[in-house]
Length: 234
Ligand code: 1GP
Image 1: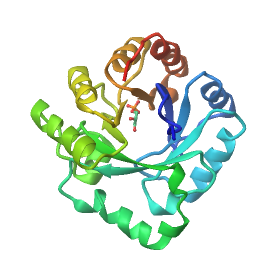
Image 2: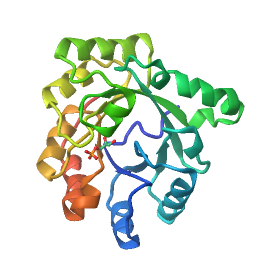
Image 3: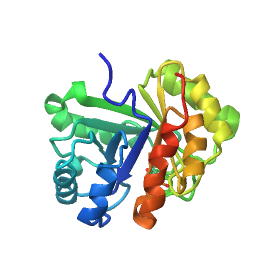
C-alpha cells in the first residue's frame, strides 16, 4: 500500500501555538502544496491543535499531525507522524515518552495512518535541539551512520533532517538521501525563498517550509512552484 506522504514534494508546516489569520491560512491551504503538517516544539496543546485542524479542514489539502506530546494527540487528521529523535543521548526522546503514551493509547492508535520519523536535529540552536539535548552538528560520517541506523537497521519509513530556523548543508542532505534505501528523506529548515526551496528539493525527497509562512507569506507561497520545478528521482 502506498503511504499518503510518498508523493509529497512540498509541505507547509503550521504551528498551533502561532496565530494565523483566515486569509493567510486560505492562501497556504490553496497554494498547491502537497500537504500541511501541524506541529511545533513548544506550546502545543489539545485545544490549539483541534482549533487549527478544524480550520485547515475547510480545504481539501491533506493534513497530518506531528505528535510531539501525548496531550496534543488529536483525532481526525489524515496521517500521524511520531518523531523518534535519533541523535540524542536522552532516551526519553527516542522511545521513552512514546512508550509511555503507547501504554495508554496503543490499542486506539490508527496504525494504518501512523508513521515513525527518524528525527535528526542538526541545528544546535533550534528549540527542538535544546529541548531534546540533540548532539549537533554531526559530521558527514556520523550523519551517514545515523542514516544507516534509521534506514537499514530500524527500517524507519522517514528520516527527517531538521534544521529548523537555519538553512542546512545541502551536501549532507543529498548524501543522506542517496544513502537511504527505503526511507523517505524530509528536509526542513530556513527555507525563506524560491532559490533555497529549489536547492532543498534537489537534495531531499520532501521539502518542509515553516517559519517563513508567518514572516513573509508571499515568499512562502513562492516555494511551492519552486519545488515543483525540480524533478527528483527516488
Ligand atoms: C520546522 O522543519 C520545519 O520543524 C521547517 O523549518 O521553520 O525553519 O522553515 P523552518
